Length: 391
Ligand SMILES: Cc1ncc(COP(=O)(O)O)c(C=O)c1O
Image (cartoon, rainbow, N blue to C red; front, side, top):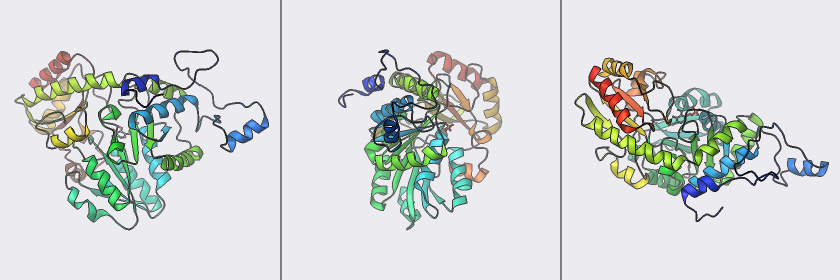
């Protein structure tokens, strides 16, 4: 695989070697374990002296292809795949943080990641301090002698705020912190955090990497020394992806570029429509000039992505009416699907946060999040228009 090849070519042509059958498309390796010709070959596999697979709790050709492909796309040295995005998030923290270590995280994080920080890691005396996405000058006040990791998502979920990756990269370098970025909303097609100094990048592959709402998966890629620690933790604790899901996800990456182009085109058109609608108070989309951090979007993202947040007039009640009148768009927990999805975060994905916690990250009762899909834009707009009119 040539490093000079373009993103789309690498996404399609990064493949594991074919078997003796000389198949064109990588087969599925649905096997729990792998066999050896003799005792010496088996001993060497267990000793890590050859690159033979052992057991699908931690190694399988389909995992290898998926991890290699995402490493190419993110510009990473190594990677490890997981059963879900949350398995990737938790295993990464559990592998790298020791009892007594401290984490700094941007406050706007996915709901379950917030639960890991506030309810699970404290069991091992690993505490997290939140910092505000928009007050980077205050970040240094959060640094403690035992701070080890810095975590962020950009664009954030569901507020679609941005964190300045260049600033975060320099900040972490200056303070000797490991920078971990959840790049699930942008995907490597739109944004490559390692270019800005991230040490690790995490994905919920359930989102745009699959892109069709079929399977769950997670991936962490980045510095080889850190991935080795994550591997050692995960090999024994078992947050493993299934080979079937790895196969699906690797195939899906072949079309990531074309899918993201259309997601972004549709999302921009929908944002422009919403901005001009009298029943909409505000719209936040990184591809709109009105986004408060449009300059950051220009610096670190190729395009605005598929997620649009807006505030509907009339708050909670009208928001719920709006959702009830949608007929094409789906009401579902996922995002990053070929189907357009609308959600009301304060009563669903972020309901476990207190009202105060929600407001701190901009999740007002009026906020609607749309994950814009790949249907024809005229049909997406017409469904949203009729629901707005009835709300
Ligand atoms: C930004 C972000 N990170 C992580 C996750 C967790 O991923 P999974 O549902 O695959 O465990 C999600 C899921 O919605 C997410 O939106």
